[in-house]
Image 1 (tube, helix red, strand yellow):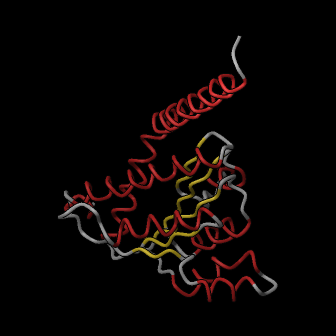
Image 2 (tube, helix red, strand yellow; image 1 turned 90 degrees about the horizontal axis):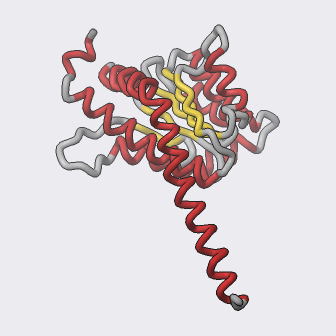
Length: 213
C-alpha cells in the first residue's frame, strides 16, 4: 500500500514525463511539417537583408520578449564570424508603446509604428499565441501594404492570421503554426524556430552571390 507521499511523487513523475514527451513530440511534428516553408522563409529574409532591409519584430505580453530575443540574435550574433544584421523589436520603447495604446486606436499601436519606421525592403515578424491578436493582425496587414515581407509565428489552429496566409490576397507571406494551445509549448517551439531562421539566413549569406538572383 503506497503512502500519500509516494502517490504524490508518482503523480509528479507522470506530469514531468508527460511534459517532456510533449516538449519533444510537438516541436518534432512542427519542424517535420514546416521544413520546406522554413527554408523558403529564410531565403526570402536573406534577400531582404541583402537589399538593406531590417527585421521589425513585435508581440504582446510574454511574446514581446520573443520579439526582443529574435532582434538581439540578428544584431548581436553569438557565433564568432557571423555578421550582424539590422533588427529592432517594436516592443522595446515603453514610452512610445504606452503612448500609442492610450488612444482610441490601441489595436493599431504596432501598425502606427510601422507607418513611421518601416521601409519596403524590411521584414515584419509578428508573434501571436492564437493567431487572432488584433494589434498583430493590424500590424502585419499594414506591413504587407507597405511592401514588407511578413512572417507570423502563432499557435493553436493559426486563427485569423492563418486564414490571411491562405487567402487569395496572401497578406501573410509565411505563417508558422505550432499545433497546440499550450502557451509554454508554443513559446518553446517559437524560440527554436527563430534560432533556426537566424542560422539559415546566415547560411544563405555564405553564398551571397545567389541572393542577387
